[in-house]
Image 1 (cartoon, rainbow, N blue to C red):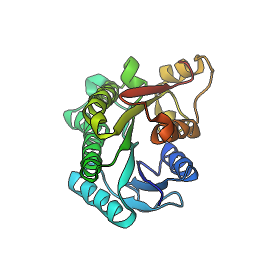
Image 2: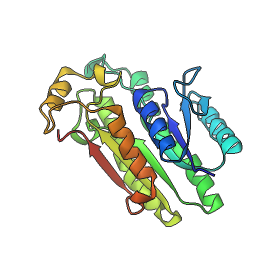
Image 3: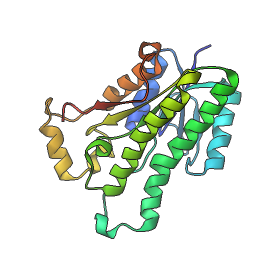
Length: 230
C-alpha cells in the first residue's frame, strides 16, 4: 500500500502542485482545506484547521479511511498585508499566529503521536517563509514564520529518536494568489535575486517531494530556502 501523505491548504496552488507531485511519486496524497470542494482529483477533507477538535477528527477520519499518516505537509497559512503594523489589532495578530503556528504545531503533535504509537517513522514538513529568515514589513507574518523555523529545529530534535524527520521550506516570492499580495519591496527583491524571477508552485512541490522521500533520510531540523538566490 502507498504511504499516506496529508497536505493542508491543498486547494492553493502550492497545495495542488504538491498533491500532484506526491501522487506521481507513489504516495497516497490526501488534501485538507477549508473549501467545500477539492480543486484536484485526490481524496479530500473539508476542515477549518483552526478548530483543533475538528482537525483531530479529520486526521482520525483520514487514518480510518486510508491508513496511518506517514507524511504531513503543513502548508495551510494566512497572510494579511493590508494593515500597517501600527494598526494591527490583537485579534488580527492572534489569527495569524493561530493559522501559521498553532495549527502546524498541533497537527504535527497528532501525527507524531500516532507514528510513535505504531512504531513507525515519518516526515513532517511545514511551509515557513523567507519572511521568517529576513524579517518582513508584515511583522506578525514574519514573526509567525520565524516561529515555524524554530519549531522545526525543536521538533526535529525531539522526534529524531523515533525516526520522524521534521523540516521546513522557506519560499521566496512564488507565483500564487498570496504571492500577488506581497509588498512591492518584496517583489523587487525577488526580481533582483540571482535567478531574477519569481518561483513556481511546482518548484516548492519538488522540494516537499524530496523531504517526504527516503532520499532525504538524513535530513532533519532543517529549513531549506527556495528563493532563487534572493
